[in-house]
Length: 530
Image 1 (cartoon, rainbow, N blue to C red):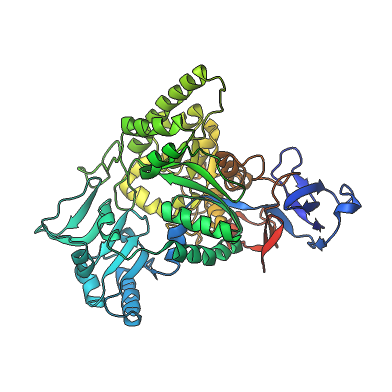
Image 2: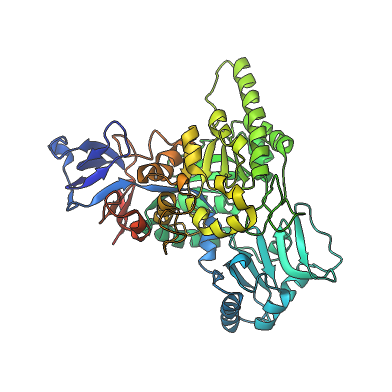
């Protein structure tokens, strides 16, 4: 295939702009001007009529199974709690009595009424077990029937790493934080691997329409099994870097799995673990208390020593870490652990007859970092895996609960200035996976309605559009170990690209969130065309 009459942004510093490219066997065979490409490569010509071509975009942090299944759940991302309850009531009218009603997306911080209760859900769905996950995925909301099925009573102790919300008399009120969510999760009928595979197959076109050609997935074993089912059928049509959940690390080590195992469609990444909770439910681990709640410093789920002990097994088996850290204390502990792990890697390489490259460790989110720790990711060679859309979504909560500390929250420009590699994603279904919404947030620090003002929220953290694009392309490719085949358009690279009607580098930054692909290509095949 031969694409010509286009404005091609390659993101290859050696050849940043081209007007034509040729594709053979799923890879780019030549790139340059129309005159640069030989006639033998000009078969199947496609005149792009001046449209813009960019490398395919990668979401470097997504929960792929969650996202696919959420498309089938009640949408709880509403302006009020009452609106959410009305949606649950509507689903209850359509659902046979006794069947579960599942939903996702509520955020009590945006509701004038605040948190809901079991009574609220009981009133609108008295004949169904109901369970709704929060937008952050770090809290859940259950009705009485769901709690009864999970055997949660006033006598139930809080589980390690979590807690049950309770009323004044100690009775569970239906809100579950962190690991307490697992108590209800375990009694919900689980989707089969085949059902997840079918959901993923339906979700792929939704991602293609947004320009996403690759993802880094952070769901668990069932998602991995479903992805393999699609792969074996030849139906997996995006590049997937698959993390290993911490609970499966001993099994992975025993089998000898290493990062990079797989092919250009499905590949093993690193080991995912959690250092803390999230901002929304105020469970992110903090060095100082949340404003207005002097007793609350969040929940530290692992300190540096615990992370190091798990990390030792991972590193000794060629597996990097991907550690969730949101609060400034959590990021401090994770960085201390990575400092120890880098020393371990140096010792291993000193005694090894085949010294290897540094493992590409990453911190997921890096939402709030203390000034003393800001430069440490770059110093340790740790990738800042961040989600620009979180900044504009969370800015009011960050100001409310973190106050002046928020100046170093979602601080991707600070990380870039220190020399850290940025990899950008969405954390979908926490946020929309639309990368153009993420690009808009990274460049403007504004919401789609222009708030909080023309300069954006903490405008010193704004990126140039090119810097933002690199987070979704070259940065994501680097942390995956795919930088020799993805992230830019160059000879020999995979033919993963998107075509736009409008040039993002020439439109107003405030309009970036309105852009959408005209077409998406993966491996030389058009998977979406408008």
